[in-house]
Every structure is written in C-alpha cells, then in structure tokens.
Length: 121
Image (cartoon, rainbow, N blue to C red):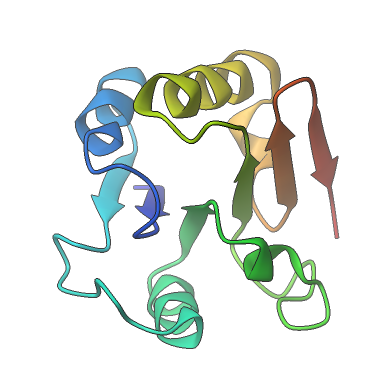
C-alpha cells in the first residue's frame, strides 16, 4: 500500500481529508507517529525505511544535495501561502487531479499557488 507521511508543518486535519481522496493510500502524520519535533533526518529516514512519500512545507526537503532525486520515495514540497488548511487542501487537490500518482515516486514535486513542478530522477 503506498504511503504518504505528512510532516509536522502540515495541519493534522489534512490526514483524514487526504485519506478520503486517496483511499488506496495510507496517509500518516508525524504527530500520530510521535515524531513531532523530530529532526528532518529522522523523518526522512523513517519515510525511507517504509517507502513513504513525504509531504511538507519545509524547504530543506527540496534541497537535492541533501535529498537527491531518485534517492527517496518522493517528496511533495508545498509552497502555498498562506499555509491554511484550505490552501493546503487546494494545492494537494491540484496535484491529485493533474499529476498521476505513479509520477510521484522518486520525484521532487513543488506546488506553489500557481503551478506544479515535477522533478524526476
């Protein structure tokens, strides 16, 4: 079962909302895993060990020097502002409706208020 790990800066309310839209996916939040406050490296390692795609507002995860393309299951970097639940939902809905989830794997996906960029390995 494909897995998405929502970073601590993603509102917890996104997890059930996203689960409803991706019923074949397992959607987890770092807070429910007691990883809240953990360093990026800990979250990244957890995701790698479980083949999970990370969804985050944290720009560090978009640094290909630290997290090289093809070296991870996938990273979804949200750059929408303001970072409300509604804007987060809208950005993820745009991703779901326009990029096949098979393109998420191993890619860095950057979603801003106007476009979605997919950087593949």
